[in-house]
Length: 339
Image (cartoon, one colour):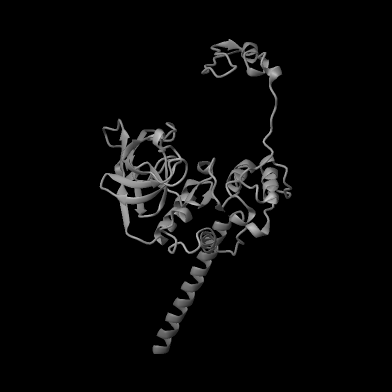
């Protein structure tokens, strides 16, 4: 069998184009004369959680897939790091927020407080819901920036702007960006890496202009630097996400009270909340979320039972019907009494 393979050269690897499988294997690093001189090293210590040996060992078992599981293959989390499920997911989410962001409005001007905590989740819509809830709780005047959305090469206007405004592809800011002074945001593009403006940089908003945002970098070697962020045209990284080319002109930031688990990789967040309305995709994803924290006492997890939201919705509908019947019954009784 012949395979067409195009690779960009890396250390110890040849560039192979349109060769047989055997030739491709022979060109791999393992067949190199350097292989005999290489040593297999394993990372066996969690450097973030050095102050909590039990937590560090637990994280390694989670990441390695060696932690005990139940009959369904689910990991059993320690009770002291969990927010108990009460049957009302909305109230439980508020409790998680209170655990991670205690006395929020009393500390809203403290950038160390704001950037030392975050809630992680595995889906964009869950992250967006938490951020909307958090910015509503955050005190101060609100500034709303609207994006400019368009479908490239759509002369017949098959995709109206009203429809495009509802889309929020992965890696893009929302059409409606609501911000307040002092709120935390995360950068979504590499704008100026030499000055610290890289994808994943965390900032705090310091001021608003019509076409720019005044922000302060709060982590890393450029911490304390004030920058102005412009609106830029953005396209989804996945070209096949829609049957058309989508473009949004907006500030390349999102609120970062909550963020995606994958977006948090490489960051140390001393106080971590993990929101899981549905099971995580793999133990590796759970490890990434939990290993952002530095100790067992600094993490709280809200994991809802399977179908919890659907069950709650069903219960609410039943209660609403009962209340409606009760009200109608009282109205009929009053009418009969009047007669």
